[in-house]
Amino acid sequence: MVLFSWNIYGLSLHCHENERQALLDFRQGVIADPFNRLSSWVGQDCCKWQGVGCNNKTGNVVKLDLRNPFPSSDYLKVIEVNSSLLELEHLNYLDLSQNDFTGIKIPKFFGSFQKLKYLNLSFAMFGGTVPHDLGNLSMLQHLDLSGLNLSSMSSGSLSSSLPSLSGLVLSNCGLDEFPLFLSHANLSLSLVNLDLSNNSLKGSIPQALLNMTSLEHLDFSNNNLKGPQFPEWLQTQTTLMVLHMHNSNISDSLSNCYGNLSSLETLDLSYNQIYGKVPPLPRYVTILDLSNNRISGPIPKTIGHMIPFVEFLNLSNNSLNGSIPGSLCKMQNLVVLDLAFNTLSGTIPSSIGQLQKKLETLHLNNNKFHGEFPSALRNHTRLGILDLGANALSGEIPWWIGKDLVALQILSLRSNRFNGTIPPKVCDMGNLHILDVSCNNLSGTIPTCFRNLSGMLLFNGSISFGKMPENIGQLKRLESLDFSSNHLSGSIPPSISAISTLGTLNLSFNNLSGPIPTGSQLQTFENSSYIGNSELCGFPLQRKCFHDEQSHNDRKGQPEGDHLKINWFYIGIVSGFAVGNWGVCAVLLFKKTWRCAYFRFCDDIYDCLFVFVAVRVVRLKIKLKCSEVQD
Image (cartoon, rainbow, N blue to C red; front, side):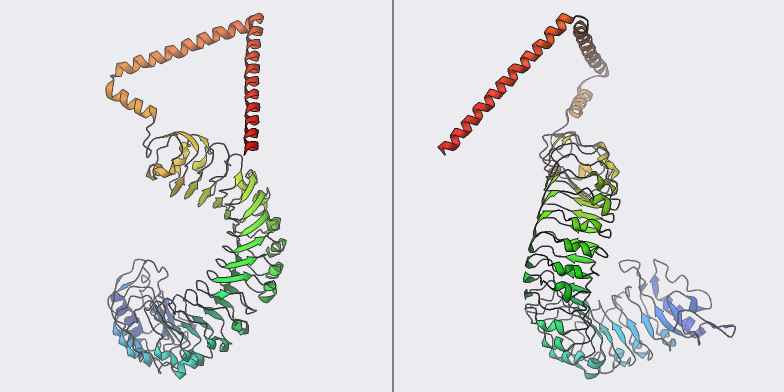
């Protein structure tokens, strides 16, 4: 089967006229095609139309694929499916998914496509019940009815007449119990892929599934399996390659049975109430997600030897303790490692540096790691996300971080004990979008060289002094900015009003002063974005700026001539001050005896002040020491 007509013996094979007309009749039922997907449906050769595939020898239409490539929009809107589609007698592939069939019923004549092997009606907004006629599709191998309301589907709707079915997807169908037809002997032997995710399935997984000896892909995730234990029949599924049971309300300890599933490549048991220690795991697993459970104890020391081929490892949000085992370096295919939100401790091991070939995401945040920034990460040139936040790491942020971690897009070092300054090389990180160094012991000023940040720039509680960068407006795509709880002084740079994408702003509890710049964004934030800066003024704060209030009063109560008088008054004061000051300076400049006497007087005043302060400090120290002795 191919998608287009084929030239054989010099003759061009076109689609049959009756089939072309049947497709045009179908198009008559389409009342909206916002993406013009059917605009190619013109001319005589329907084998060249988008979504239509023909047999390369006979020219018969064998495939109709109108799946919407943009599921959130651009639906085909269909109010009628013309029965003339039955002219497509050789059709073996029909995909109408992700469109809008306006609640019409699934046509019964779909059950008359005797050669149909693939049928996908998922999220196509059909209404009514599933017609029994679909049970006549004896050659059907794949059926996807996801997103359709099957809560009232009877047990006989899909039964013994689907002996060839190998893939069944009934996700998001409103099912509250396991369909009885799953226990049919023929179906149990043929089924390879079973997806019942995102329903309301209750109770235990039926033992009838024990007979499904050919399963390779099984998905029960996002259901409400009230406190079930892991079913014993899983131990018999030696062909199982993919098992998804996340958020299924499982409450049980991890058993050793998964070590016997030698074919398992994907295991997702996240978001359950699984407890106990990490057991032996399937050796050839490449995706392992046990996050958001109650798993405790240390990570097995031999985990790197246990699952050496793993690419995605997520053990976050558990109660794991101890240190990161050195055998982790054996996972040479690891792309994502997430150990966040546990109680792991110790230093970050140097062996993590041996994961440099493929590691792209590393989450070690919210643990109890200590020591300095791990130098083992220096050669991780593929690392895009690094989160070491909420630990007890100390020392300086290394200078090489901007030179060597060139792919870094997200860097979070928040809530540690880092000191020193932010290294200038950070400015060379051209891919960096989010930087969070808040709640550390950093000093110095905020770097002025950031250009590409499009996410968040978080420095709260980290910078001891300095001003906001004047060119901060160059961060055109910045979405969140937090400079709160520092000792920033000066005014808010006017260029900040050029950041039209800013959704979150926190400049609170600094020493900022002057007016809040006007702009499309800055006046939309709450007062809490600016509180704790006693010298800030302007909307949205209640404190008005003096020059605004003064100019308002001037405009309200004074004629234009009075403004000129006031301006001349100030000019006179300034000029008088300049002339008088120059007179004093000129005398000191040309008369040496006066100059010496003046500077001797200044030195005497300085010496007196120094002695006074020094005596006061000594007295204060003695008083404090006496108080400690008395206590």
